[in-house]
Image 1 (cartoon, helix red, strand yellow):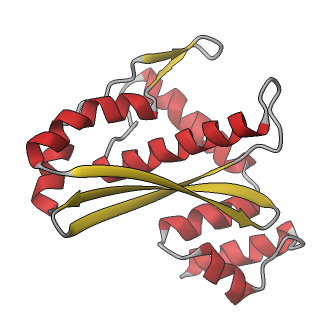
Image 2 (spheres, one colour):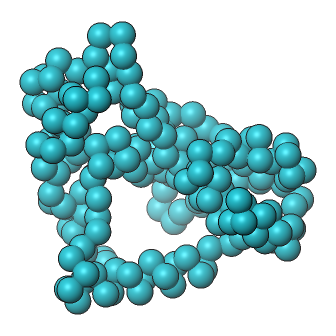
Length: 185
């Protein structure tokens, strides 16, 4: 199974074919990845399924999307999370959930197929992308940083919440303490 995944990863080309006219940047959608990977799945006699689960973490809802690659009795799964906005101008709640699902699914597929958005470090685009990522990282709440760190380390947020007594009324100061503890491990 790992050999099949490796061949799919090495052959998959999913260029950024969409343009965000408001932000002026190119991106790839979940649909772009699926269109590119389908012929490779057929070549390797594999199936790919995507599923979503809504999770309440603290006082916010997240979509956990899982991409599952199967061949025979073997499977490999990768999950990714995206948080629903409380509201978004011009969208009803179903549209917000759908957009969040699509975003989470795209990142689950990115993880499974090793699709990476890094740029060559010698380019201006790389420098701008790195500066933007650093700024965004500083703007994240400690709660969000705890969630991201837990996910990166393969720690279930539900278990983490239970171990540290986290809930909807947990303060940012407490999340900061938990993050410090996680980073020390």
